[in-house]
Length: 372
Length: 248
Image (cartoon, rainbow over all chains, first blue to last red; front, side, top):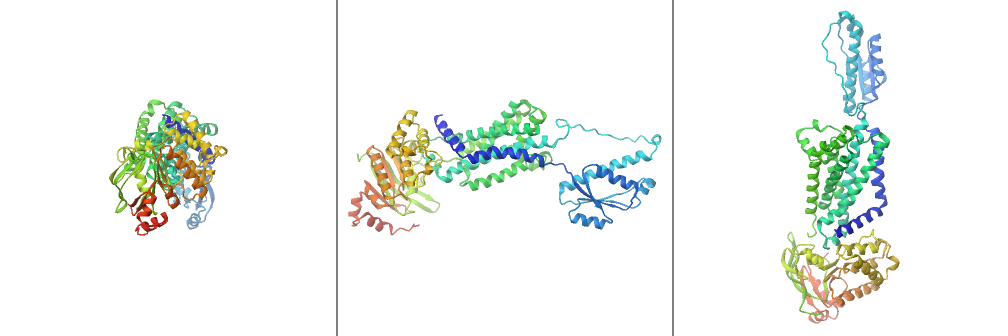
């Protein structure tokens, strides 16, 4: 135990002496948490629309004003022909072109049927997909309005329609930030913990002090614990700062059991730091460690369920996600912060991460060789 | 010095890296309180041999006992009984002189009282009082080396291994460094030292000269000079090392 005391004393001295790093550890996450959720948003707005109206009828104008009034589209202008509209798309001035054929109003009234044409610029997949979907739903709505207008109420046949009234539970307004902020906090915590620990032992290898450590009777698990504990404490500080920032700026405060949240974070940090230390024991230079961590961080983040749903991934990817500690953290944070879950709901996650932590740290201790 | 108490006993100690034999079946004994010079050209296998003796590297074959402990199975006991100062400077540059002493003394299990007494004595002996609270990184190389040596024997080991401790150090500091080595030896610590300076070889009780992973000569400086019919250690070294195949 006394050995650990001396190790901790040394590590903390070194951490606090490196003011620049300490500042980065604290300020970077706060800044990112303040900036990123405001900008990183899946909602697509400001879709540039080009309209080719061959009809110039009251109905076509009504349709166009309905589209622009939705708030998702910005009318960039009327083009005389589809050819011109395509050029507009090619010049990236429009994302969508809507063609209203001549006789739109007449056909609609006489024949009860009319076709419209939408051309979508699919270079930006998200924008195109969502834009097309928005426009289709506005058209459907418009269609409904027309039916109401033209068919006398008493003659209206009671069409069997299913009306769906969605209610968004836990996030009634579908506020994107409620979804994004906990996720970003999860990533920040992972990055800070993972990189700090991955770069630490390997740094001692680089400057040669590890050799001096290896020639002392220090126990391997003492050495690893001496590295783990300071970063674990630092991770808790970063997380707490993150919670405070989310609360002050976004008004997001865990709805569930805050102790369960911290309990999970304690185990989570153990796993992530263990992973970093493991990388540190396998690499020889900080550069190597950095690249290895980058490789895994990309996978952890992109396959962690923050940006894309894990449920819609192919089977093999689900296996990767199951081995990805970030996916558990993202899920648990959303459960506790938004849904208000408590201990019982997160127990399975807790168990899995505890297993990760034990395996990764055990592996790191095993792989750390005092004798080569 | 009692010559019948070997603290290092190596027999056919060998280290191979793939096809390359860095240390080729070396055998020798070092006795308690002796200053043993371990000489050889760059690439002759000195550092590799020393790392095996310190328990940092497992031998490919052969046997060695350090302070009575086996280099294969008892590396941790060996580590409790030796001090080591590597070629690469290895105190923490971002800790102060006192903090380094405290850390290394602490992990060797010195009590708080011992730590206090020993740090005070060490700082006084090295005349580092004004620098005690300075970062080690700010000290000149010669001071760092003297400090590193003093830290490596803080826990009073049986043997201290020094790998080119005076490399890049000025002659005055080198002289002071050797005074520290003599002081340690007179306190009963066996000193195992590698060096490229032939004047330093003369300070040793006995020396061995490694060529291509083998021990080409072993004896007191005087014996070696007579044996090879040379007037200086420079001559002895040159005669033995020039035939080497592994040179930088």
